[in-house]
Length: 315
Image 1 (tube, rainbow, N blue to C red):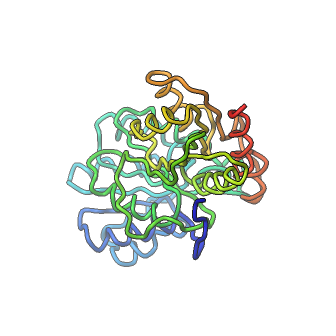
Image 2 (cartoon, rainbow, N blue to C red):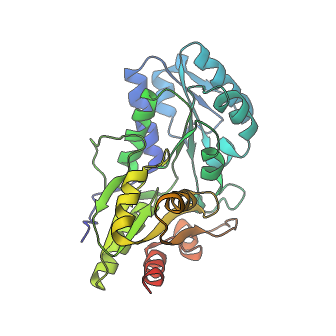
């Protein structure tokens, strides 16, 4: 059984904010830009401690991306901060032309992703951002699972030379990874080994996958659980080793199944080891207003939905 005890719940956006604060104290080249959402992105401590390295751009996200690209020319490492919807959909052209095309060292940090944004509804609950960003040549895409991993990812991307999309969320979720973990871009984490099915999860759904694995074990199904915090570049080795052993995989993400983690895994398996696969994610739909728990249940993103998909693939 996986240990699913935890001492606290914290939002992953606070992991970003605390990581950025630490970078402000240790790396003089790190600068931060925000589109009028300093509190929501937990960037206020960085602003207070480094006023000369913080730029409040206002509700002008496209301008923010252009400024960030320009700052890299002088050797700065800009971290942009706004909601995931405004970090991608609203500014895709600027990211493509000014950042990705020329490989600028910009860290696009995106909060309030997925349906767990909650009551703000469909206009803010972007479910296409992973697909949009992973298709950009040279763009690294990271979606950590809890506070500690988000903080570790924030620190790690400052050392990486190139554009990065870092996705995190609004709700408080269990903190279950190590506070001193070694975050390696592009390397998945084996949470539990199993023999019957592989569960590959990312972001908030890693915790749900762990709960599902424990439920499955009580029913005699041994699930291997992998935390894929980096969707691009994908850790192909850890996935292929697992699926070659189990022969079946369920992918889990708080994102549209079109264009997300599941499709990346499907492409990998088609090329190297065709296997049965089921998808946990939103299915070609927008979200709606509601509490995070209500929306997770309605759109089939919780542990119960994962258990059901596993049982379906076991038949």
